[in-house]
Image (tube, rainbow, N blue to C red; front, side, top):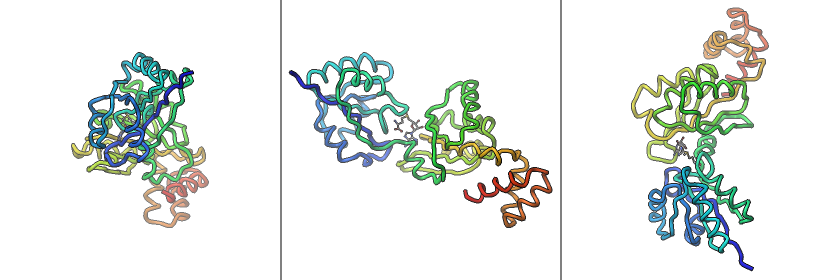
Length: 281
Ligand code: SAM
């Protein structure tokens, strides 16, 4: 009886080449085949690590075909490591189709955890929220993007998006329109690289910051948006929230809430909840 090989799903760095685990190096060294999204890109990493490997292309356009060939190799006892260009395979990257083929064929699948841009951004975001929703890339077309964002409007979890540099400004503009201008946004750019930048602002302020300097729109982006406020707090309209924010910057909480209620006519309870939320940020 022949034993099948193992499929290793190996996370690789998202920028800094030293962000690779010792186990990933061991496995990349030991396997018979490395299946890579872009063989030239991965050859660069492997050379950097001093590893000579047989590279095979497996990307979104050939995943099923290349995956089936690799399943035959795995059945014959060969071991395969799957890598993508950056981060964790299968996360806004090819991999899921191949992994599913392997599972259907009864081939052992072993994940090697490591870098992932979404988790890296979240770890340094300081959003004190119990849940996040990983969305990945929004649709490229404006109309579809706005529809997708509308569907997320009441979602209380922190929203995690990937975005391309040439679309980031229009995406934050659509987010402000669909989700409200007052939500906090954290722009996490060029993570683990030389020009790593975190910029925290409201959705309403984001486009202006991106357009202010060409450098602000360059590189790779993760966008983290705070979730929808609790229904009580959401009863406060944008103008009342703005007035409350201004008053909070000058006055103690109770006084700011009292004055905001008098000025705007909004419910005191709702203003109080919102004030607590704003203070906790
Ligand atoms: N599989 C990868 C992961 O685990 O994060 C994601 C691959 S996806 C094709 C590429 C997108 O991830 C980029 O457009 C960007 O949104 C995000 N990304 C990847 N590397 C990044 C970095 N160093 N800084 C910020 N965002 C990054």
